[in-house]
Amino acid sequence: MRLNRFNPGNIRVRRGSGGGGFPGGGGGKIGCGGLLVVIVAALVFGVDPAQMLGSMEEMQQGAPTQQGPVGGDSVTDICNDNQYALEACDALASLNETWEPIFRQAGVPFQQPELVFYRGGTQSGCGAAQSAMGPFYCPADQGIYIDTSFYDQMAQQMGAGGDFARYYVIAHEYGHHVQALTGIADKIRYAQQQDPSQANPLQVRMELQADCYAGVWAAQNREKIDSGDFEEGMTAANAIGDDTLMRNAGRAVVPESFTHGSSAQRMQALRLGMESGDDTQCDRIVG
Image (cartoon, rainbow, N blue to C red; front, side, top):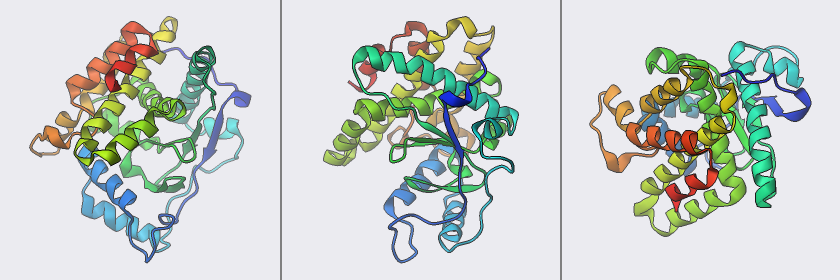
């Protein structure tokens, strides 16, 4: 995908800080939010929960973690740290340029998210984070957090390489930002609290809508798509489906435990966005 080079004045990026524990955890224990992240990471990314819990406890006890990339702190310096960072900044700029007019037309206030690069571990507005969790969006500080080494894992362990696959990751997390701005995320969280038995199915629907939003962004920039990009996107969506990840981790496939959707569902959601180019079509996923 041939994205335009980012404009440093039109995107918000920063380096993540290292160390620290979960805010308000108390007593040096991992809070429920942190434990949920561990469970989700174990399910979705095949992480060993015991290993991850141990690492988090070290962070809470003040153990040093890797800091962000070495170099200046200007947007240009951060984005030019490596090829993956540059791609992510280009994608962020394109996503801002695509979504802001959509929000304006709908009469909904728009705020750019912040792209946060880190290595190893960092603090977010949602608590401590580690690379093993994979990329994530934090609504508390409107930050998209990523350790770009995740892209190597995608290519080497999941067979999902290519620049469009990497853009898809950023676009998906940006989709969660869209959900936060439109209030969809709050509605889903409220519904989950009202009926905990539906927590996972509702989470799946929200993740699939974010996939659809990623497809809408791609469709809105169709003139920049190269031959093979669609296939890269489908390969990535297939590789990170809950059922595929469970099989690859040697686990039984338990649909009731899905948090992001099956490979077929994720491919279908991404395809819906890419073929329609209409964000309102994504509403039917959570409607």
